[in-house]
Image 1 (cartoon, rainbow over the protein chains, first blue to last red):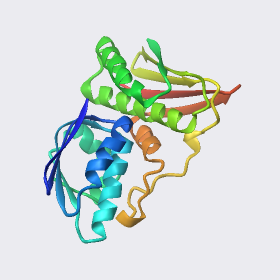
Image 2 (spheres, each protein chain N blue to C red):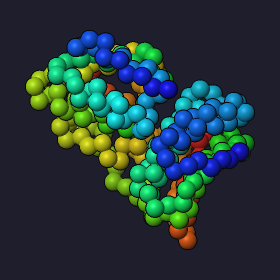
Image 3 (spheres, chains in turn cyan, blue):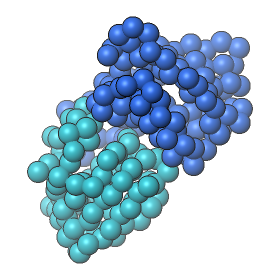
Length: 94
Length: 132
């Protein structure tokens, strides 16, 4: 199960299991962001490399205008995946 | 224990259920269970992505051998794709220089203690070891 909610112009909430089969659904929401945005991970159990790709692509796009994603509330397992990928150096993780 | 899964991303949710059951049966802790799930999902996804012409199903097996967990993925009628021979991902590159390619395999290597690959008679066999 995976859900993505656009809570406001500056907040997205992820829920459940973000695997490769959810890449298109997530991309659609992330592609609609046009400024800095918080992404809430509190209810996200899992993120695959396909999920990381969506976040990377969005961060690269936003950075061209000086904007960025901020990732909030990751569980320790997901946090470790971000560290292994070196994504803790290109995202603000809170 | 082992099971075969259809070569489609829709199988990922069945894989999650299968691995959850296997983790319970083998009494794996949460951290190991997460690592196993991620490694299998990434490799399965890769087999779909780069092996469209392969046979209908892909086998996933797990067994515990003393202090090790052995995970196997077997893909029949597949093309060669040696994941142990890929260029390393630069995890310290600047944001604008990052590319998503190879990230999944990089994560598998980080999460597992051993990763081996064998390709014989059009059959790909991947064997992972996780020390418990």
